[in-house]
Image 1 (cartoon, rainbow, N blue to C red):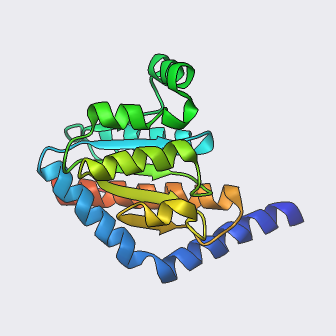
Image 2 (cartoon, one colour):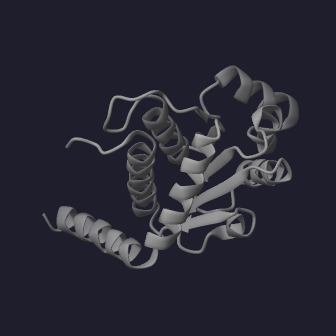
Image 3 (tube, rainbow, N blue to C red):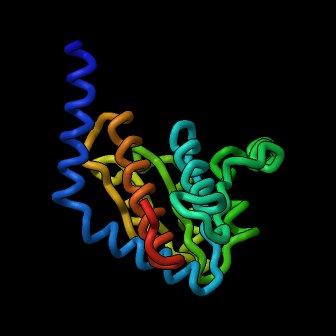
Length: 192
C-alpha cells in the first residue's frame, strides 16, 4: 500500500503545484487555441514515446469530442503516419521526423503543440524552429526546467516535477483542461 499511496500523493503534490503556478499560462494558451480555431486554423501535435501518445490523445479529443457532441476541430498528430515518419527518418534522419512535416503542412496562425518531458528532443526542437519561422503559435509541454524548448516556444507549460510519469500526467491534465475550455468557448456550456 505504501507504494500506491506514495505514487498517488506524488501526483497530488504535482497537481497542487500546477494549481498555484499555471492558471494564467493555461488561460492564455486556451485563448490562443480558441482564436486559432475561430479563424479556421489547424492544430498540429507531436511528441516521442509516451509524449507521442499524449499528442495523439489530445488530437483525438479535438477531432472527436471531449465532453460534448459538436463539429470536429482540425487537429493532426504528426506521430500517426508511420510511412511518413519512417521515410523521413530513413532518408533524412530522425531529427527531421517532425520538421519536414511541419514545413509541408503548417501555415501562419496555426498551432504547433510539442510534448517532451525533457524539453531537449532534437526532432521536437527542429520542428518548433520551423513552425516559428512559418509564424505558427508554438506551445511546449515540458518538465520542470523546460529544457532547450522553453526558449524556442511562444508558451511553455512546465510541469513542476522531474519524474517522467508525473510530468506526463500533468501534460494530460492540462491537455484536458484546454479541451474543456475550447469546447465551452466555441460551442457553449457543457451539460454535465
